[in-house]
Length: 232
Image 1 (spheres, rainbow, N blue to C red):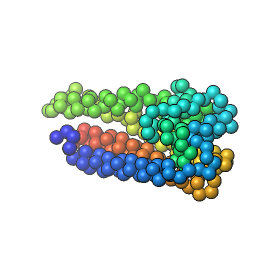
Image 2 (image 1 turned 180 degrees about the vertical axis):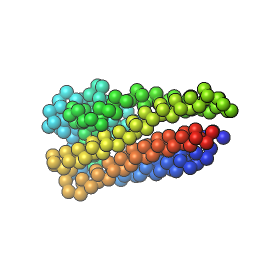
Image 3 (image 1 turned 120 degrees about the horizontal axis):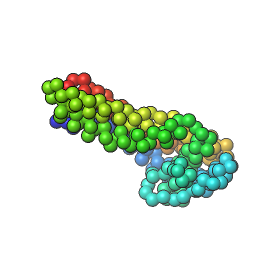
Image 4 (image 1 turned 45 degrees about the vertical axis):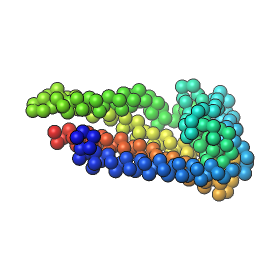
């Protein structure tokens, strides 16, 4: 039973449960603070443009994108893309998320090393995520007896999956740094005041938990592969 082996139960299942908790946490925090309007009454889109202008990044565009919680910064097109509730909304959650994505634009402009590393390994990480398990599974089937080719394929699968784990690892400082920049910018510019900062911080901290959970799942999958390889 490949999908429910002991390695899955020991390593992956707890990490997946943690990931579900993190998703519930971010949705709860987002819903709570999307109901509280900032006293500045500025929308997420307006704040994003203001923060970029103050940073001298007039060439970075702020656009509305489809979906919910689909906000991101695209370093290739140099665009901050905000979902409609964030772009149009003036809630604590909207401003916190908008400022966070601007934080990524500031990282890009300033040559922030972890972001540069993450961007550089995106192709390898994508390949590792797609190819690792098929390679490992084929190797697992061919490794009966003295199947040298099978063990080689399993080792290659583990090696390429390492890049997916590395991507998740380097994502953590990138996201934490963007959140620190966001909160400092919102407070320093007067866009959020007093306890409003606490609300935005809670939203960003909940979002950060999802990145920690993604790292935990990636590590758990790696440990599972190593566990199966060593016991086979």
